[in-house]
Image 1 (cartoon, one colour):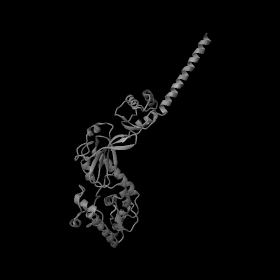
Image 2: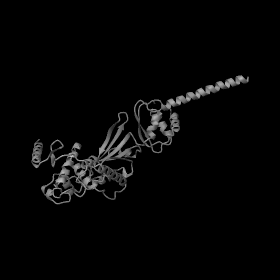
Image 3: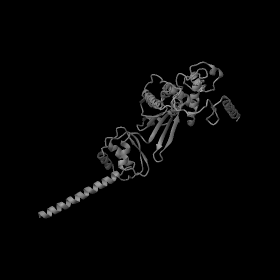
Image 4: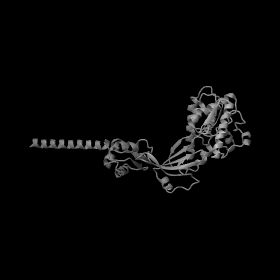
Length: 384
């Protein structure tokens, strides 16, 4: 009798062990195996959301087969308390493990609606776009100039949505005054700006931030980023440059930035100004004259007059020798690099060539011929 009871108990124990092993194997398969999702989706994790809510949302969107397995997997991998608020792409067939990685790792949103406030040299605009998770391409929802154009329908709801992502993008060549004035118009920022940062001190770049970010704090980040860029490039500068300080390098870089929009030309343009400085020649560059007239507060909107080219200002490089006292805009990294490592050339002159670039010359006679060709191009365009 006792032997039969023991035999039955052993049988039950073996069956239970096999059942447990089967459950564990199933759980591992559900956790690490391919998921049911057929197309990529954008999963929104609200701020303060519970693991239970997120698992139910994922189940409703077809990303997982079992909400309990998802929660147990999060507990097992010690990620149950590491949920990050935001919007995250979940790829087709993503496993529970991969989904947990997407919503607990960096906290940087990878999909959803984005508002990009772009500050350009001529104007600023707010671009509202949404990332299609299936194609990984952005779909533009609206584009408008804050304070000028009417707000697009639905903007308030987008601003109120906690998953909306924000960034501010500075174009190369904007002035510090422009940046400050445009930041005042950004509806998702807060805080006052006590003073305009020094010209050239802000790094043209794209800055990701959150709604309610402080304007002054953002300017500090821009300043710190530019200081780091300048420090790195100054340390790696070419020997023998006619530049005494990092500020002079920043000033020259700002002139290069304003003189050409062709990336490959920057080192050549920088070489012209380097050669002129070494020869004791005046730089004779229009952007500095314009800055002396406008103080960087607005585009001139017209050509320079002869009287303005003769007018004595600290920024009129047709009158003064050497560099102006400060930068005339905020140059990007590539223009700073060009100023500190210019191309090797004997060029002393350049003029527009009609293609968006410039024709360079070593002698005044050659330069005059290039100028004549440019004037002919201008005349032909005027007659078209």
